Image (cartoon, rainbow, N blue to C red):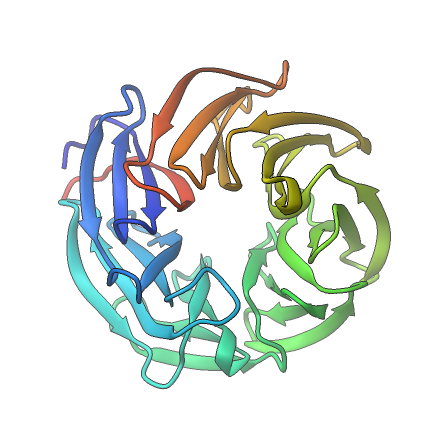
Length: 320
């Protein structure tokens, strides 16, 4: 794999792949089959600290809800875009959210077991299990690298985990459950998408309590922050009307909100390094480019090469 061009990595459910696109041209560079059609769909992606490996969670047969869970995390050699193998989680099933901590350990949620696993990325062994009591589905890391937060979909709690002690340090109540979460760049706030209403909740991380709630146009999926932390982009969906949105909020005033209509349900989003644009992975496989200042779709979008892309990550190749 050439180390002189930036890539865009996407997990794509239709062809159960980790797909790599040339960031400049949008050309498909590689399509690595990581899962099993209809039974082991890829969801989230984490990259090793040295940049040589990608870890892809294989959640199971469905996106959520009634699901035949898988028990594997795919490992892709990013230096040559080949499948290195699968981490076998044995009785732990339904891996979803993935995070690499500052020591390089891989953390993974496993819904049915109500746990978060800490895995050695070299030996592929599970080193520690943290009992959440609820089926954690999403993870977010504090910028200081000391704390993880886990949200649990329909369960009305966000769980705080101390990374060093590998233990639960708090359970923070939320009104009716939570979608994906994101910690502010200063570590003071946790942005929490409401489970089934068009609302964004804000938790005060120090006080461990709800600090405010703000209206959205659609039910939230994932929040993402611009590099400077000034813009919060939230992927949202109005399911009854089959309408998707990318909502751009000013973190200094979360009621200052601009809405971009997109062609299908949006999943993960990726800001450019300068924060002027973002790309949003849509369920139909389109990955439109959005100008953040004007809140408009502009030229420069991608195509994932299949429907239901979820994760989208920028990747700078390293020499093999």
